[in-house]
Image (cartoon, rainbow, N blue to C red; front, side):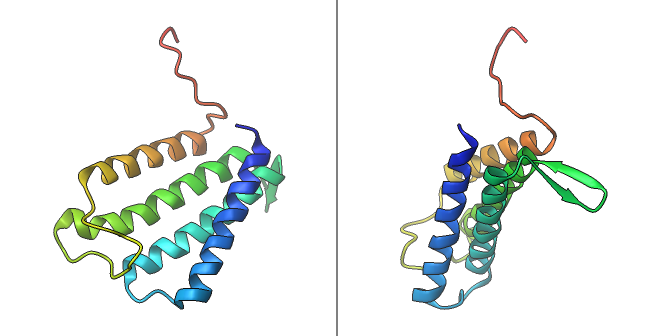
Length: 133
């Protein structure tokens, strides 16, 4: 995926979070608040990953793919915050956008997204699925 698309994805996420906050007001419950905050953080991380090759933080020079992985991890944490009450059998989030109960597949998808994010944070610039490696 071209890095320029990360900028588009990040901008879209930030705009959606802004729209949710304008239309719905601040989040009522903790899981939805964590989801909104993590989505905003992921959007900002994706914009930084798409626009900069490296970002200087103090004496460190952080490459773009660390921000992309951090964005993936933020999305996974936000999705897990919404999915966890359903997985534990506690009452789900009080939002009309979420329909039905959260399934185990959502939890597995969240863990898959987190593993991709961790791969990028550990320095894998391009995921390679070559079985001969």
